[in-house]
Image 1 (cartoon, helix red, strand yellow):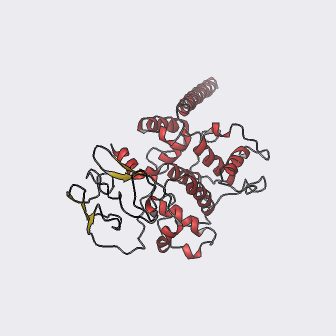
Image 2 (cartoon, rainbow, N blue to C red):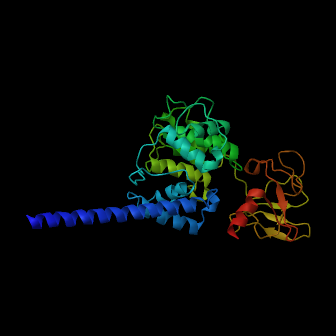
Image 3 (tube, rainbow, N blue to C red):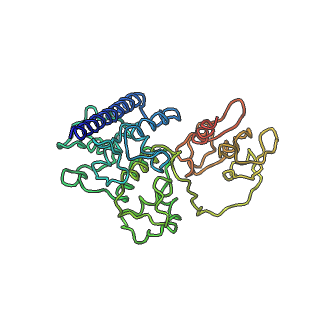
Length: 352
């Protein structure tokens, strides 16, 4: 009898010790996450070092996530942005259902941070009410679109696509258009069976690489997304490096390379393989550079003097009128004479 009691006491003591250790680890990781979050203001603050520290803390804290799982990079980043938390029993629940309230909270806090809700006066009482109001102010939700009556309902992939595209159209530099993405409809196997209200949003998120669809080619707009999928969609919207690479078939006839003279205002926009004759008579065969930019490191300003859709010759600083660079200034490096539109220079800068 005494042996039984002693054994019971030993087991009880060990159990308490193990629970205390687990609790201490959880408390420590919670503190680590809070400390790291205090250093993050946007997705751009999560570099490789910050990500590694966040991932380590997340794995320590949450018992149902695995290093190397497809969802880790996106969920870890959302945790860092203070947009995603686990449950009280330290579960991240990647496969859990996402409600409208959950999604709008994740999306808004990933975009604006918790401090972005300061001064917001909600229209009703709910833990996501401020996020809803902020989304209305940002044009991501229509006034009264989300209410107490529907916030707890699961959100579909199509509805998430709609909200993301509303933000994308406002804040993305050089966003894709529906017209540009129309050729992709044939790649989405269930496009013609999809609710027509979701079709334009599906084209944009598919074309931009934000939502890729399933391996069988379906977009499945009516499907309910889980927490991992919702995290992926939000992070891909915020972080272009996480997006899928999508090649959109051109609807325009492809011309053959030709000779372009700097003093011919009616020359077409340059393409790879064109020979560009510079003001000093130098002939340059245009190539795609290491950053994916045409004419990179070739010292050419192929747009200067060309008449675009605006009807006047392009000068340095003019805004592009062609679809690919609509509204972007054309900038020329004084030292090299090389010219590119703003997003092209940004692509080059990211590589350097």
